[in-house]
Length: 223
Length: 315
Image (tube, rainbow over all chains, first blue to last red; front, side, top):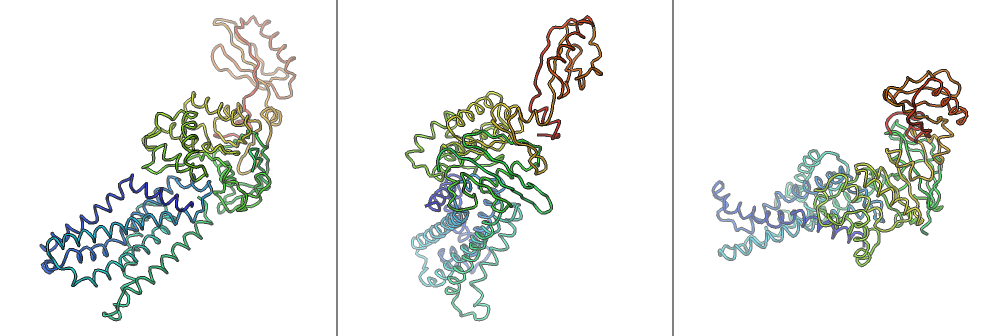
């Protein structure tokens, strides 16, 4: 019940502080802008459907975006000693961590879905075919969602143990960029390998490991 | 757990690396008692309080609340505890109402209870006018009242207040003092630290004096004065143009003389002096010297004087 309360509270915070607006409007707007502007620089993109551009754009910025936004907010709240008032109540430290992770991840997943749906709607309206690239789109989205989960969990770990917002952001960007590569590793050895299974497994395993480690360390740490 | 909550610290120690924050600190707080906690910056007051409320999970010794070890999961402490930290922030997006609603729900209050309780607490802390304002836009004193409001929202049986008077104006300080006494009268146990020693002296039943992680003494304000042996003070105010005061420096029972203004002097008695005999002697000397006395007051030393004499430094 406590996790549910904290999760709802985090979502309310995202709504009130316009984080939701920035993600749910900003991300689709960015990908659409890239679709229409990037071909001026990269002519090959002229033939790509918007849905495909959306999927590869989100794959590129999703992990780092998740990491930076979450770790920076945690460091900032920790420095302001926001959590003291939560933890002197019947709230487990693990609940606080899980609620933060789940709320941020939800926001990012919804942003991804909105971006992709917008791309498909516009593709259909323009008569641009995206069905031929459907497999690539799905692969890209699964890899992105997996990387986002790992990045969010890594961001919670960074946020709980780094004291500077700037340092947390830098470490998170590096970490997010590295994590997005994990599901791609099979392609390094075999270009025809399907990254989806590894994306799902690595997403689950690494996310769980990060979260368990954070909870263990946070339980033994002074606030 | 009942409303009457007692607290016991038994040989509590805490180190931060090589720094000893608390060293074998032991004391008890009775149910319904207001226990004041004073000591200079870095004495270990906040560490003591954080250990009690569970924010510092690792420490030596034991802390019991109504006989239950605070480290035991089944202690039930968090359901009956109100805590006002020395510094605690709120997320930028939060309004006062949102702070109380979220923290109240986490304390176990239902929506219906919150709808009844929030207006009461806002009224009590005089925050009704800012209920829907963002906390970050409020003044430091008003934010301190928000911290106090969240601490008393669920009508806790034990309330821990770390510097509750800081950033408050004199009128609000008075209100908070009255509020704390009212809560104690209704059976709430109060553990408070403050650097405003007169506030502690006014409202605390007993006081603990902490210095460098050691508990120097626990007692009532009278017991502390007696223990630390600070004598009484006679304030002499002369008419303008009066003869000057005679020299009291070598008089039996007088420790020192302190000139506060051209016509106002404080005469500090030794702690062993017989107050009546020394007062009589002072009066005789004043009359014999032809001094025109406008006012003569016998005052007991304040807690601040006791504190500065035996602990020193900034409270």
